Length: 234
Image 1 (cartoon, rainbow, N blue to C red):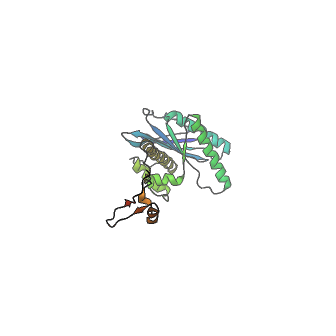
Image 2 (image 1 turned 90 degrees about the vertical axis):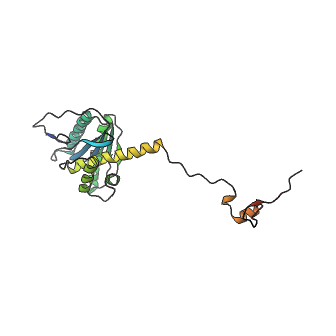
Image 3 (image 1 turned 180 degrees about the vertical axis):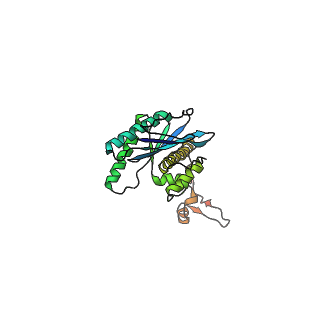
């Protein structure tokens, strides 16, 4: 399995040539975004710094394509567990399935996504799913944006010039940003819910002229509504 990382420092390690990984910065509020696939799993970690979201790291987990599906899923699962232990995110978001060439491809993608969800739950996280359309609209403002546009907007949001970010990794960062923005709006709604429109009181304002006439009201020449005098019971 190939393990690649992009961030303030970039490393690439394989089982044949292991390299020491750089130390992780002090723990902050981190969100992990995942773009699952059967052979490549994009991941991205965003972190809250100075009131804005910054990229902590991103990369792609790759499993050997020649291996059986079970072996590939096992490689992705173990690699994702290592990432979770290393970065320790507080929240996680996963891109939902949207398109597959055929039923078999959809089944394989669903299995890869299930493995990713399993790893997240094993580390005590409650992942949230977002459709590709929701992710594109949250990051670019358009649901018809292509992957290159998503990558440019991700770099703009995160204020990074890392042009070597892979497409799968930028998609994962977009998922994390989508969760960060929707999480912000959810917190605002829970803190200050929007007031509901008030109902008009049941008085003569909403009744028609015929209803007012049947109720015993009359409109004098001066334009004011007066109530007919009724004999009070003695």
